[in-house]
Length: 105
Image (tube, rainbow, N blue to C red):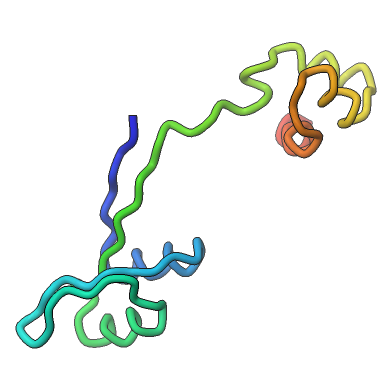
């Protein structure tokens, strides 16, 4: 299930900056709503009224990590196999094994 979350103000700007996203602006008495604002445009508006800036994000359940999908990964890591060898055995990319190794060791 996907959950929609609305971030506002400086929190929205910080998230958009980290993820490379554009932002939105609510309508105000002077100007209507705006979409696809750059970080600089959003900061300028937020300097007057941060509550005008918002960003809708969707968060899903995420994909399971390789160690959750493949319980034998622990044994394969302990056996001294390379990330490429383990990836080949499990049918996943070597980078996912490298990340799992860092989390587990």
